Length: 298
Length: 285
Image (tube, rainbow over the protein chains, first blue to last red):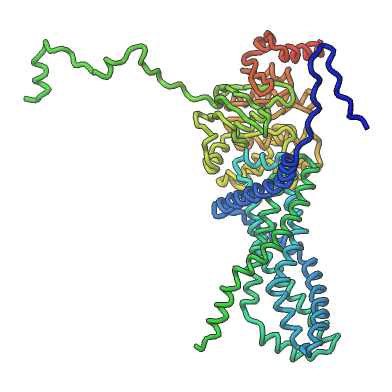
């Protein structure tokens, strides 16, 4: 076996060029961390931008002129426009939830508890979360697309040049409408879900309707509903803010608009699922305290 | 006897002097301040990422004059215009509107300053969710709460007729249902609806036929002569620029390389400017 031939010297007698060194392990590790860190830093920067955007929305929220007609238009779009899909998904969620809960509860003879179990889950968690996901998919993508198109066609700039603040005119009405509408939609979702659960448990499986309703009435507390309303309102604001932020910061023409719409739905949905845990943790002590004080003898 | 009379009795006393006035020499004298320019830009720089788009722009535009900003595509003309109306914040430098630096203003103050402006966008930037009529009426409905519905209607019809747009036929249509030239004219009508003191035009004649181009030029001149409106026009249209401009500013790679009259532009020794006008002259020949 022979060694590799040494590089030939240059014709002018200069030493030959050294082959470029391969990056060492430290350098490669550094590049890997940098590659992983870039999206993390971008994410943190974007979160900061969303906080600043929220600050701008809060700044313009109490200032005149109030955009009543715009707000009502979005109330109609978000509220009435999402009604069908909310009723449909709520009803089927209730049906399947009732069926699955019944299967489990039958094992220890607690069929009568299907009603309260379903309603507590729907009112506290599933109603607000699934309604918010529906609204994120339907209205959130619509908001991002509409504002994104307005951005790339300079319509938002045109508003500014006419001394009309775009945040106040375009974003505040959407955020207000979504914050107002989500609790109502979540209530409808919960109601439809409970109806589905009732039909599955009482009509199909033959659980006594009186027992079903009595146990539901007996076990549920008002705070179970309050938690759902608070969450839904929060999710409404969250979905609208993220979707408007994405639309507002669109660039790059039709492709940019499409990306903004997709990003709005993904980010809103993830934030709803993360947010529901955070809000639940924060609300639990308050709601438990409420229940405790109401249970004290008068 | 009053002190006044006492003074009269001393005729030989030297005339009273004002030490403050005596201290003024030609070197220290302060000239009365000239009225501020409509628009003044000082050392304006803008960087997007690592790319410097504006490299220390300085310009002054007199009130009631027409300034045309010429230059090739991607040289920073539109970016410069967006700074003038506060749509972009500069990396450094200042933009003075009637003597007020808008780069330091907050959102509420900026809104006040913007009410002095009208802007005509390159692609018209009409609100596609509104009809053409509503687009022209929009600034009036937003800012002229004193106007009745009938007065707004009268004004919108006047403006649409002024720009050869039939309000009964084109008014109820949406921007997507009219031609590019018509859209631009609706944009013009909307921009001047509030009778602003400064109007910015981002390539107002691009895509228009020669007759409409001439009408737009006449409109800019008429706005200057009859209303004293300051117009700032970004354009590639050299013929229009020569017709309407009091001052031509030629932007090349984020810097103003020529400033002055038509003759100054044609006499410029800058290679890009020479080529720009030579191509145009050759085409016209």
